[in-house]
Each structure stands twice: as C-alpha cells, then as structure tokens.
Amino acid sequence: MTARKITIEPVTRIEGHARITIHLNDGGEVEKSFLHVDEFRGLEKFSEGRPYFEMPQITQRICGICPVSHHLAAAKTCDAIIGAQPPRPAVLLRELLHMAQMVQSHGMHFFYLAGPDLVLGFDADPAIRNVFGIIAADPQLALKAVGLRRFGQQIIERLGGKRVHPNFAVPGGVNSRLSRADRDAIAAELDAQVGVAMEGLGLLAGWVEKNHDLALSFASFSSNYMGMVDAKGGLALYHGDIRVCDQTGKRLEQFHPRDYLAIVAEHVEPWSFLKFPYYRKQGWPAGAYRVGPLARLNVIDMIPTPLAQAEFRRFRELGKGRPVEGSLFYHYARLIELIYALERIEQLLAEPDILSADIRAYGPAKACSGGVGAIEAPRGTLIHDYSVDANGLLTRANLIVATGHNNWAMNQAVESVAKAFVHGPVVPEGMLNRVEAAVRCYDPCFSCSTHAVGKMPLEVTLVGSDGRPVARVLR
Image 1: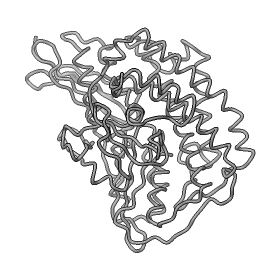
Image 2: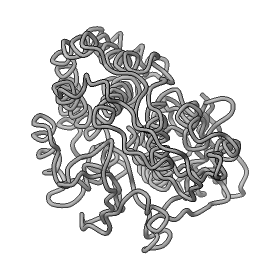
Image 3: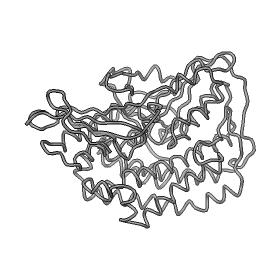
Image 4: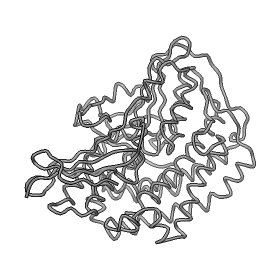
C-alpha cells in the first residue's frame, strides 16, 4: 500500500484548537505523529504598557475554563511588584477561590470530557460519545456531575461576583470579605459533593480493574515531573516551592518560583506555535517533564487531608516505588485532587479568620525587572512573570502555562498511542479517538497556552511516504 498521512482536526472534547497528523509508512504502520497547535500567541505583547494592577483582570480573559488560575497567578505577581504580603484572611480567601476552581474544573473534565470514553467506550458511536451519551447512560450520575461543577462555580460567584472572570483578587489581597451566610451555605453542601467525587473515584476504579493492562500501558512513558510542594513536601496548590523529580522519583531540584528562569528553558519546533519547556540542567530533550495532577502526585510526599491521603497511598502502590507513568492515571490523580480540594474547602471554612475584614495590604509599585507569581492550576504549574517601569506600567510579560509545560508529553502520548492502535490501510474512527483520548488525559487548554484568537476545533491527517495527505478527519 501507499504511505499515508492521517489528520485529526479538530481534536474534540478539549479547550482550544489543535490538530494531529499521523504519518504511515508503506506497510500501513505509524512512522511519526505530531500534535500541532495553530493558534496565535499574543497576549504577552499586547499587555505591554498596561498598568500592572490590571493584569488580574486582563490575563484571566485568556480562558473561560480556568480564569481563576490566571486571576490568582497575576495577583500574586502584583504582590511581588508592590512588595506587600496579603493579610492571612486574604490568603485564605484566595485559596478558597482556587479550591472552587479545582472542583469545577476537575469535575467537568472527568465527568464531561474523559467520562464518555470510559463509560461508553472508545469505540462508541461519536454521535453519543459525549456528555449527552453520559446523560442517557446514567441520568443520576450526570445530574450529580452537573451539581458538582455548579457547586464550584457558585463559590467563585459568591466570592468574585461572577462564575466566570471574577473580580476578587487585587494587589495585596482581595476586594471583599466572605459573609457568614455564604460560608454556611457552602459548608452545607460539602458532604454531598464529597460523595459525588467518591462516586467518580469508584467509577474509575471499576474501569481500571476491568482494563488493568490497558490502563498501565496506554501512553505510558518515562519523564521528569514538576509540581508544587509545601514545607513538609505535601500537596500544595496555592503556594509553595516547585519540585522537579526524575523518572525514578529522585528529587532533582526544589526552588522558589521566582528562580524559574534558572531552572526552566524553552525549546522551539517549526511545526508548532507552542514552545517546549525543559529542565535546563539536563538540556533538550532529556530534560523534558510533565506537570498536572499525575506529576503533582509523583513529586509529593503526602496529602494533608485524610480522604485524599488514603487514596494517595493506593495511588503510589501502582508505581511500586517509582512514579506512575501511564497517562490514563491523570484521571485517577485528578479525582484524588478533587477530593483534596473539597476537604481543603472544609478546612478553610473552619478558619475563624475566613470571615475577617482584614483583607488587603498596600504598597507602592516600584520599577521591577521580575515580579513572579506561581500557582498550581488544574492542568499544572502556571507561572506569571512581569517587569514594570517606575510608573507601574508593564515593560515585559512572560507566561508559562501548564499546557505549554506538557507540550512534549502530549506529543509523546499521541505518538505512543498512534503506534499502538493505528494500523492501515483502513483506520476506524475508534482508533483515532484513542489518539484524541491521549491528549484528553492532559486536559489541555490551548487557548491558555497560545492565547488564542478564533475557532476551537481539532483535526487528524494521514500522510503518505511521499508527503501528501491521504486521509483527513475533521470534527
């Protein structure tokens, strides 16, 4: 047979626009594959000249799925610019907003985006392999999943006035306090939402038990891992040092976020607008790493809440003393973090300071060549870095988002799955859906990573040995 090129465009059930090209040799086997990100990156440049204090509102417009992550990372960067440490009540409230974001984002991804593959099957009719298929298959579970996301978004609304693009975090703290009535209303729902998260965990555990070999082998490969840790080496999503571990679990580095440029470098490939970050000391590509739920659970020593910690112990057993490598286990790690976020909300609401009116510190902006703020977004480590002049106007902005950190890993996952499941000359839709599912493990947000303008679909193309496209799938 003639060599072929398959194009998947758009990749479905992700946020943003990307396409995959799969090159087949004359024998119909996969020779090479690429995940292309075609969106334009421009937000950093057009932020130049803006007052620094506008950035918590500007940067969250990158995305409607994870605006809170950019909102808080920008606010933390502004704290550094004015040299002000927010009062403890403000830090608690920011973290509460962040935990709400983790709940709504992790819940949405597992139940709406990844769930159709697990509940309905990779080979199910694409017309029903979506959230509507989940509703038809299990209406009660679907309603609970909707309620879980609503719970997270409602906390964001209670704090920031809106469920999307809230107005809450400001340089030096937050701009409004939490009322007792809102605190009590949030607390009243916690037990029910923890139950939904545990139900999701049971669903995934059942699937893994039935598909154990697939779960272990699907897009499984060695890499470094990066994630934030607290002072005790525990899971930290709002504030902490950043730890890098290698493929054996050995700690390579632990550093303050402001030092990221000494640790992380970026590689460029001609076929993608998205850069490839790597661990500088190992060089490219040996220093490539993964971020996000799986990476975070691979670098931490413990989780400081009881239910999540108990599940974390079971998670670590999968690796038998080494990091867990299979990409499908991102979903498992995501659910453990979902449980942690709900437990952490309970802890935060129990803090007497959560109702305090002492919510902001003030300080003057000074010429600054590197105000840095970092946070663990749902998809992984997010770094904001701004320079300002003596008038507080931005002269430079640099954002490294989770999807950028995971660019190399997603390409590895795509090629691994394509080589395992795509075989010519006939290529059924289910084969290509498995390739898409490899990308969905990482829950990419291409609008964040490339600061997109325009549409948000995905495409897969088969390319022959002569370089000409032979087949194309467009969603």
